[in-house]
Image 1 (cartoon, rainbow, N blue to C red):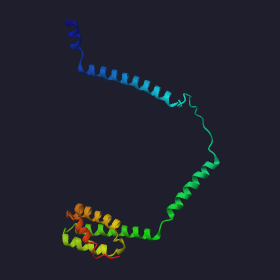
Image 2 (spheres, rainbow, N blue to C red; image 1 turned 90 degrees about the vertical axis):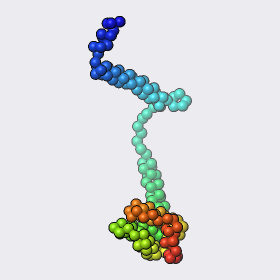
Image 3 (cartoon, helix red, strand yellow; image 1 turned 30 degrees about the vertical axis):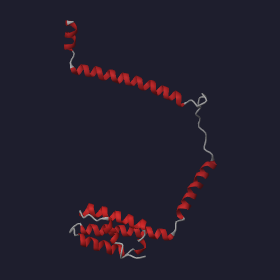
Image 4 (cartoon, helix red, strand yellow; image 1 turned 120 degrees about the vertical axis):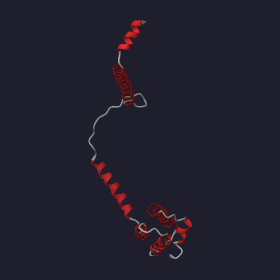
Length: 168
């Protein structure tokens, strides 16, 4: 028994960790090899038990033409947008930029009344956007940006009041 204790006392922690690390690398390497070999064997088999045969074939000329025709059709369908809808989205982007400018200007001197007045003026320039989907999107921008940049909380009711003067 004393021989075993003497032997264990002569092994340092560094030697033990190196031995343990090498053992783990060898073990997991072997497990990975076996699993990879099994996975490759299964991936080459079709459900009926037949083996897959891989071979390269030249691409058909018609295939490239079909792909290009599909891309052209998709592009053409994207180009068929309603001009009025495009104008609405352009105005929405402009209004968002105007709101951002008003909020950034108010960041220097955060005053709730001045901020709401500036936002109302910006919204009044775009009466076509006084529709529920646009109002909701713009209200979300106003509430989030004013809280982030000016540390002023604008409620949903306050944001809705900004649209009262804007008419279609």
